Image (cartoon, rainbow, N blue to C red; front, side, top):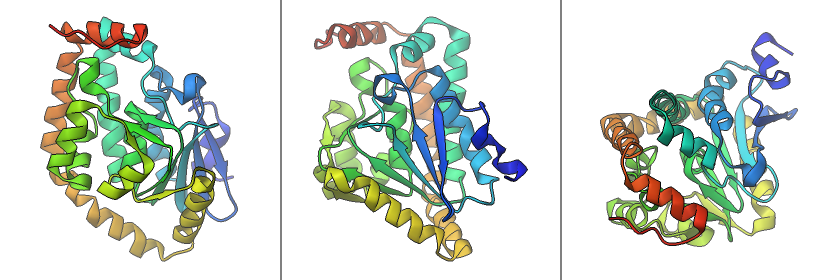
Length: 268
């Protein structure tokens, strides 16, 4: 194992599993309680891991998935309470949220997401910012920011309008309506929808093909296409700032209470 690959056997990213294959494909597995919900540790890990993997010359493609039957149920109560309850914590998570998006956009190697079950919040960021996304028919993709009482701020401003157009982006980001796999493919939010039991095999085949392809050609094509994300960085920075401004306001307390009590929020 090279020095650059030692992260796989270390405890630096405790919420993630690394499963390297002989073909140059690294499986990055989100592995946490609560359907791989994103707590403070996973949020930090997902922000920091991409530059580390990029330095690993043994990795030619990354397949990212969730452990078990879910991709990720999104931010945990612990993470949200950290953001809401403490200014220093809020600023830390804001920096991580920024790094997560920008580090994925600038990651040089192809990333393929295998989406089963729910993909919400920071988990949805990883699923949709992957270069190729494969969703199961019963997968559930949800951006629930406005129901929590904050602006849709992380990846949404740069990702959704480019993938599905402004009209669909506004519809789903304002209403927080659930998208299932087939509809997500139809509107262009994900690359491909397959039967649930074919998701991992399909994503693995694609990752293997890319790992055996012309690396400079693949990586420079990705770099060029991601320029579309980079040029909308001001919109991303604005949206992220407005999201975290909302975490210091009153609506998020009602939104959080409604989620806990499994009821519709009653905003003033």
